[in-house]
Image (cartoon, rainbow, N blue to C red; front, side, top):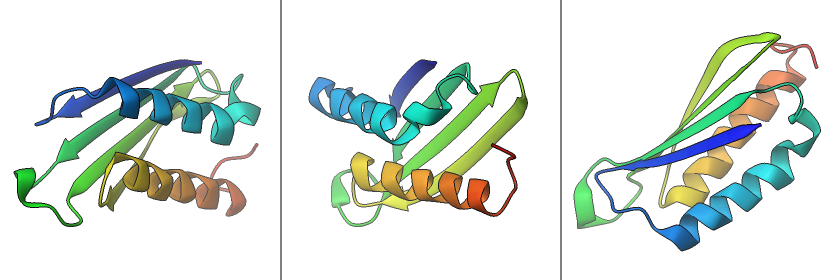
Length: 99
């Protein structure tokens, strides 16, 4: 699985990118053969004001899966990613995806 991480309106933070990559590998390891590309785009929607303003767009695609996109909002990159992953897991449990 190829993981692509990008940040809009923010400089890339190597430490956060490493934490994100580790979290993805931990949470999605059982799906590694199902997805070819996992793309994450983080955006700080109101600049340096603070608050719940970081969006995460989680996009997955693979040989058996047309592109699926999950969006989430959080206080920072990790929190917004965790919310997006929860949406993904809920979709799996509700049989949206048959894995």
